[in-house]
Structure formats: structure tokens, C-alpha cells
Amino acid sequence: MILRDGLNIVIAGPPNVGKSSLMNRLAGYDAAIVAKIPGTTRDPLREHLSLDGLPVSLTDTAGLRHTDDSVESEGVRRAQKAVERADRLLWMVDVREDLDKGLHQARSEAGEDVAVSVIQNKVDLVSDEPEQFEWDGLTVIRLSALTGDGIDLLREHIKAIAGFGGEVAGAFSARSRHLDALQRSEGYVRDARAQLLQARALELAAEELRSAQSALSELTGAMSSDDLLGEIFSSFCVGK
Image (tube, rainbow, N blue to C red; front, side):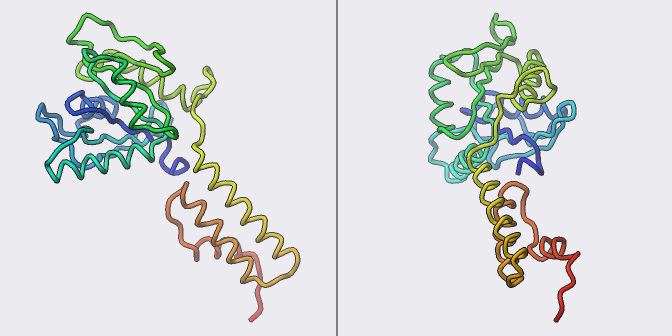
């Protein structure tokens, strides 16, 4: 999905920490409903935006908590699935809550395969100033989604982790499953080329290319096998 949608960023965290407000602030308009009632966000809400030319797919998710409400529980399940697919998780917490506890929750939800940045929201309610710092190996950004104070810090951080702009070496790297898909696709294409160079059956080469297309679709989205093969074999003259 990276090649098609850009950097896939997911906003997650407990209920009522300002996730939807942050989504709206970054999007520049009211994309998400904001309310003080926990569980307002049910389905993940995705918006596509550009940060100074960097394509970003931004997803707002339901507050992660245990609930007996069946509908909200489904929202939590979908939020967890969105986190698993993220290239970067923005884990939001209330600046008034214990930071170490927030970092523990962030790592627990992200697992080992998702990079995390922690957003301490609601600095407008305390005496803290917006700032960015490192805490226990994670980047922490203090801001106010309500007033917009500190949002520029987050924007620059997102560009930096993508290696966008050239001033900061990118800390963002392709996830292991993306690299695996590319490596598998390369192998399939190499085998298809060998089939063609050795004048073997075109059916065998086509099967290898279908496998390559399947691997690439994990990155670029669905693509018709007929479209792929038609494009590749367009220069061939195949006798009947």
C-alpha cells in the first residue's frame, strides 16, 4: 500500500485523548466527529493528505479499551487490525497521565513490527509547552490538537521519519513483510525471464508472473492478472 497511498499512519490510544481532534487538525477540516462521549469513533476513518508533498494515509481509530458493548468491541477489533497494518503508530495519551504507562501501552499494542511515536495531547490544559523529546527510546511530542500548538512539530516529525526533505536521515524503513513481498516478486520475475530466454512454454512464464503480481499487490493494491500479462506480452507475437 505504501507505493499507492504513501506513508500509512494510524492514530490510536485510549478513549477521549483527542485522536479525532488530531485527525481533523492534520487534515485541515472536520473529517472526524469529535465528542466527549467515549466510543464515539467506531469504524476506522481514513483520510489521504499531503504534508508539503509527502503523501500520507492517516487513520483515526476507536479508543482501545475493554467494553461489553458489542458494537464498540467491533470498533476496537478493527482499530487493532489497523494498528497491525500501520507503518507508523501515533499513540495518543493525555499529557496529565503517567508517561511511562503510556509508553508501555503503546509498545504492547504495536508489537515488534510497528514503529511508534507517542503524542501527549492537551498541553493547553497544563503549564507544559509544546516540545519534542526522547523518552525510553521513543519520540514523544507534546501538543494541543485543540489549539494547534505543537502541530508543526508533529508535521516535521512525520516528514523526518519518512526521510522527506533531505535534512534528516530517515528513520522510516520498509516493514519486513514489504521487503519479503519485493524479494518474492523479484524471484518470480527472474524465473519467468529464465523460462522465456530458454524458449520454454509461455504458460510457465505466465504462471511465474501471476505469482509476482500477487506479491506486488500486497504493496500496490489489487491489479488484474489479465492487465499485467497483457502489458508484459504486448510486445510478443505469439502464434496460434
